[in-house]
Length: 53
Image (cartoon, rainbow, N blue to C red; front, side):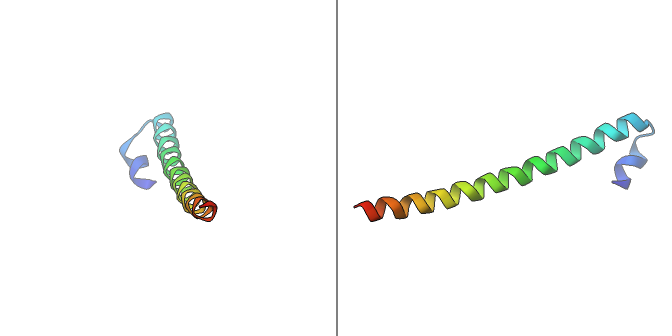
Protein backbone atom coordinates (compact mmCIF):
# COMPACT_ATOMS: atom_id res chain seq x y z
CA UNK A 1 0.00 0.00 0.00
CA UNK A 2 3.04 2.31 0.34
CA UNK A 3 3.15 2.95 -3.42
CA UNK A 4 -0.34 4.45 -3.46
CA UNK A 5 0.38 6.55 -0.37
CA UNK A 6 3.52 8.11 -1.83
CA UNK A 7 1.78 8.78 -5.17
CA UNK A 8 -1.03 10.90 -3.69
CA UNK A 9 -0.44 13.77 -1.26
CA UNK A 10 -4.16 14.11 -0.43
CA UNK A 11 -5.01 11.80 2.53
CA UNK A 12 -8.65 11.52 1.45
CA UNK A 13 -7.60 10.45 -2.04
CA UNK A 14 -5.23 7.95 -0.43
CA UNK A 15 -8.10 6.51 1.56
CA UNK A 16 -10.32 6.23 -1.53
CA UNK A 17 -7.61 4.58 -3.64
CA UNK A 18 -6.79 2.14 -0.84
CA UNK A 19 -10.48 1.30 -0.33
CA UNK A 20 -11.04 0.75 -4.06
CA UNK A 21 -8.01 -1.54 -4.30
CA UNK A 22 -9.15 -3.54 -1.28
CA UNK A 23 -12.71 -3.69 -2.66
CA UNK A 24 -11.62 -4.91 -6.10
CA UNK A 25 -9.43 -7.55 -4.47
CA UNK A 26 -12.33 -8.82 -2.35
CA UNK A 27 -14.58 -8.83 -5.45
CA UNK A 28 -12.14 -11.06 -7.34
CA UNK A 29 -11.92 -13.38 -4.33
CA UNK A 30 -15.73 -13.59 -4.24
CA UNK A 31 -15.84 -14.32 -7.98
CA UNK A 32 -13.35 -17.15 -7.53
CA UNK A 33 -15.49 -18.57 -4.73
CA UNK A 34 -18.63 -18.37 -6.90
CA UNK A 35 -16.81 -20.04 -9.81
CA UNK A 36 -15.66 -22.86 -7.53
CA UNK A 37 -19.20 -23.38 -6.25
CA UNK A 38 -20.59 -23.36 -9.80
CA UNK A 39 -18.00 -25.90 -10.91
CA UNK A 40 -18.84 -28.09 -7.93
CA UNK A 41 -22.57 -27.77 -8.63
CA UNK A 42 -22.01 -28.67 -12.29
CA UNK A 43 -20.07 -31.81 -11.37
CA UNK A 44 -22.66 -32.83 -8.78
CA UNK A 45 -25.47 -32.08 -11.23
CA UNK A 46 -23.82 -34.17 -13.94
CA UNK A 47 -23.38 -37.10 -11.55
CA UNK A 48 -27.00 -36.77 -10.43
CA UNK A 49 -28.28 -36.72 -14.03
CA UNK A 50 -26.10 -39.70 -14.89
CA UNK A 51 -27.50 -41.56 -11.87
CA UNK A 52 -31.05 -40.88 -13.08
CA UNK A 53 -30.43 -42.33 -16.54
